[in-house]
Length: 239
View 1 (cartoon, rainbow, N blue to C red):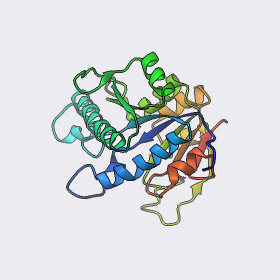
View 2 (tube, rainbow, N blue to C red; view 1 turned 120 degrees about the horizontal axis):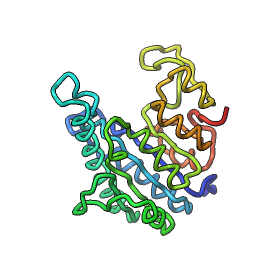
View 3 (cartoon, rainbow, N blue to C red; view 1 turned 45 degrees about the vertical axis):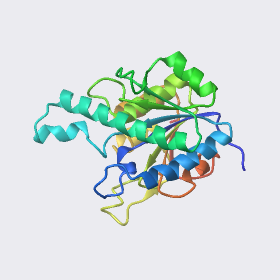
View 4 (spheres, rainbow, N blue to C red; view 1 turned 90 degrees about the horizontal axis):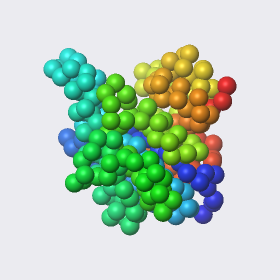
């Protein structure tokens, strides 16, 4: 098996990526597929941090029109990320991959509270650390949580796994002529508002020179390809 290009990565998984469109918000066939790849990545000696979104269950912003205020909606979304984190943990553990779930909001019966030094120690021991509950604060997305944790953990790259194969100049689902970028600068991604991540997350990565890779999770072997440093998706890096 080819060697990894990285020693430590932060993988951001959108909640929507766990949902296949059926009634169940979590499709465990999809979860099992990417968990197998994560296991293969750890077999390469790569330390893996994982931030999972909650959009397949509840997205805070959707509450505006239906009742909850933004703060309440965001807290509901944070709890949704913990459900997904526990689901991913269960599948990884079934595949004999050691894990820890750490949450920004304390819920000790199901997860450890996030403590930076403890999280670092888990990574050093080869455990996949799954970060739940976002940053623990409303008005911040899980993209920002992933950028924050990646920088705190000293990750070499932030990998965002989505349902599209990179960043386009327009929505490829609506525009069949949309052009995919192989590489972008942070400033270009911000100025053109390309929707790769929210501005706070991109700015945080820019300030700390942390590259962002956006790729398609649904392509078999994509996580391994990304970790090996193969050309895949779109890379966002220095200006």
